[in-house]
Length: 374
Image (cartoon, rainbow, N blue to C red):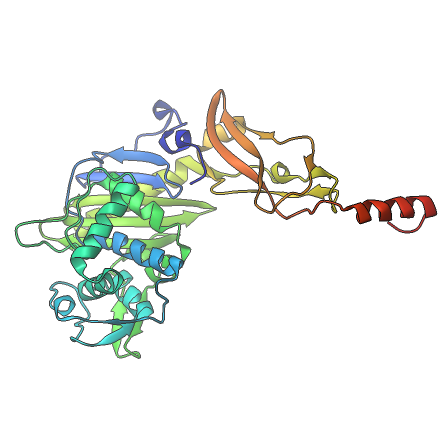
């Protein structure tokens, strides 16, 4: 993310000024804005089992492989003996059966298919064990300090188990939301695979009960209790609510809804005004000005009562000298509330401006003397 480290750790809201959320049923919970900004936590660093919420990391690595061009949605994924041996929720892959990555992702996101999660892992990394190494490495890169994955689906292993925290799952979920394509899968209520022969129904029943819900993943095994990473968006504000070890399915839904309601009631997404990207004059260029654009994440999540006091300071030179390259950083936008910096956004050239040549200058001179067109 391009925003400063300050905003990610910043709770610019005064905690004493916010209403109480109330007691939750779950052992652990976290509410984050999708930009990675922490809004509320409750016992969020306790290491617990995530069950099938593990699959958000499996889906993240799959989406990143898609983005790098290592696979496409039409890539055929083959079910191995190992993948087909998974228990729990599955689509009963047959050894040697092939499905497209598109169908595999649908089965994972909608049907929580353990066999498909392992099949995708094996395709991407060669073995599930190698894929798990990638999962743990990626978790560390994201700042997840309480997470150890043991497999691609969240089932218990022999004498070992996946452990993570609500805070870590929120961070992984926020990273997954940076790939909007995943919502094409996590937002499906009912669908089918295998040419319509195998029906899928989403395990995330909040899709029908909570306004604006977009995903992401539920989880349950007896040892873990009921877990969820629930993403939702309203009026440009995207939130992630993580609930771990809720006693019942109903408690899980109630806690996730309470967290999201709290977020939408008290926070709003704020973006810098359009004039922040006003054009800058260019000297000795084939164009007189160059428009600017904001790079990276320019959204800041604020307590609603703080919106009126937010200020944006644009720092750009009075003029630029050609040539100017598209994407070249020419300044920055500093977003503050009071004396505290919330966000620093690079301002970059939205287009290239070539430098004038001697012939261009001569042509301009001739036109100015003869009075011909510009």
